[in-house]
Image (cartoon, rainbow, N blue to C red; front, side):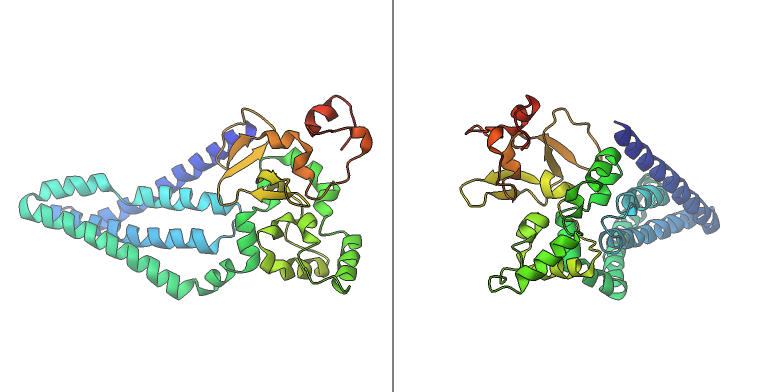
Length: 319
């Protein structure tokens, strides 16, 4: 609940501050334009058309310039598009001036304003995209950016789930790519006669490789660096699993990527701005872990039901 309130308040705050700045800028331009009806209409036309062009730039920057894991990625559009440019431009003043100009002049003013606004938006988008974001677009299509867009980095989860993040950070799961033992084992496997499947080890140590098998070399290079920036077994690597195909050996997780829904064992999740939450029975069963952890202690006595959650809660085994 704490995060949900903080997120909403932060967004409302940046929209309010941005709107105040935009409205002040519009007021200054309108004052400098003059007081006659024609001068006021010209000033508002300048404001709205330039606002459309700036909106295109803002959207391009938010989409291609700001890394998804950066905190500004979520605040940029509310602050600049909704806030600053929402306060800077004015559809109500545009409607009033079109009416006051009256007749053919009013119609021509309205049509020209709309056409000029659309043209400015297209030109702003195209010019900024072609002239200023070539490197940014190249960065976006790099493998790591693609992977982290599908499987958001754990740093994004830390903002809301601090205690859970701390528990994960001190667990072996967070070291799945950082472990020196894994690095040595990986090198031994790669130079072995059977080491042709570069993604094999990462199907457990970085399960997102299942969705990006062609980029297995990226995972290898990062492990060899000794300080990988990609997540291994982190939040999205588990909470994006919607089902597990037990017909395959080993059982294969099926990820629901491309949506904003994360799955887990809890009911009545608090609504928030970061993602949707859905309770899934799978998270009460050991099926979730069978992709990597197929050795279950015999004392667990899971049986066909494989209901790990209830049995562990009852004190039977520790799968």
